[in-house]
Image (cartoon, rainbow, N blue to C red):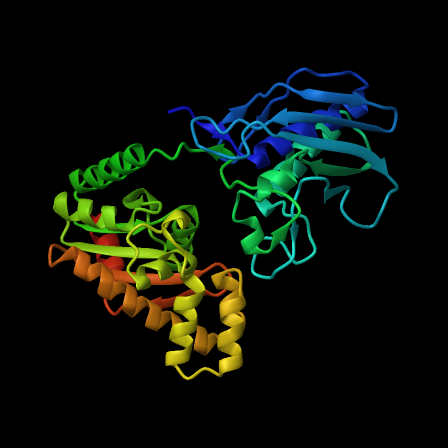
Length: 371
């Protein structure tokens, strides 16, 4: 299936092209950037408007074979010079069709444009490359806008999350991977099988890139021995058992694995979302004050929900969630393999570990060292 490129990649390409045209005075038809995944992206440029003091241009979002509602939108960047300031040389703003953050716990602070940190880094890197190449000492402002973004955002989870007025400019790798469930589960099975053939006896699994980062940061785990399972928690458990594993460690963000505490085996949002209800129920079980439980229920993310309690209480809530999730997942495993689990959030770090999780990780690392 054909891959696409994120709104973040489109914004970075448009910003790079706009600053190039502003400084050179010459119109461009295409521009090349490098995505965080290391893949080159060379989109065509549309809607180019060159003025003496500002330039705007757009890249048409292409989500590949992924059913992405933002495909076809024009991700536009307008670059202009600004007076020299004590701050950054490049100021990034959100314009028409880009959402505004109105609730805590998201990638950007309340009040900021919903342009996540990785796309911001991409925009800065690509613009600075041009500014350095053309040896310009100036300061610049880039406004990212998306005509039609407000209407498209109503078809997304943005309004529920507390992002109003448009879409988000997102992406961690810069690449859109097509969401073919069969292709994804086939890839997961292949990775499990490869690790097994390499002598691995303990499956170490995490849903995505952030989990990989946490495995490395918190446990110094060799990421070449870990497997990403996306939302397919139950399927991965089945496949690990079928491939001959007898033990498995599942490490994941609270926002995803909390759903397993409610019995969900696939954590994609289309299968339901009871995150806050499950966290609130755990808090209530621990006799946390009712007003705090209400705040948890009203939160837009698990990160924000846990900000309402102390570090100790966050750990206690996480331990309740972990035990509930393990109960459902071990029932799913039906004795075919033994499962341990670790829960974390980006802001709080490791919050809960089942009793044998660290032991299995260390055992897996010892075996790797001997091979």
